Amino acid sequence: MDEDFETVINSELELLTPGVRADDDAVRALLHEDFREFGASGTIWDRETVVRSTRASSSTPIQADDLRPVRLGPDAILLTYTARMEDSASLRTAIWIRADGAWKLRHHQGTRLPSRS
Image 1 (spheres, rainbow, N blue to C red):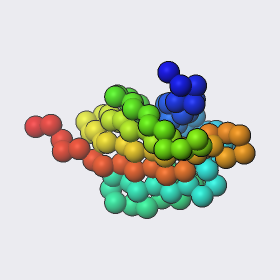
Image 2 (cartoon, rainbow, N blue to C red):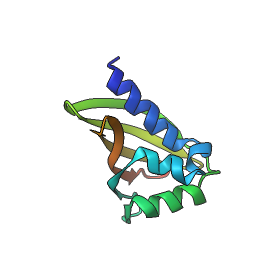
Image 3 (spheres, rainbow, N blue to C red):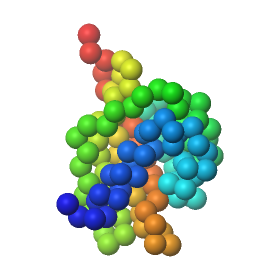
């Protein structure tokens, strides 16, 4: 697998781990300063609101399945996957860009999947 793909996948998975989610500085280190997220709830988040939100939900385990990276350019990667937590699942889209030599999450979107009945 492409080394950049591995770096982006590992960075995305880091953002899902409780230890990183509970550490504001660790989350900030992975997010681009102009980060935006369109949440599964319809909420639009910026970098600082995501930092606070991930800390508040850091004890909730998140599993990522079917991670698929696609190169959009030499310094941009689109990563899609399914996130599962407790009784819910969502489709996730993440755009990672290389800025100042490091991969940073620039944009993220979640789309909630219907619950299984």
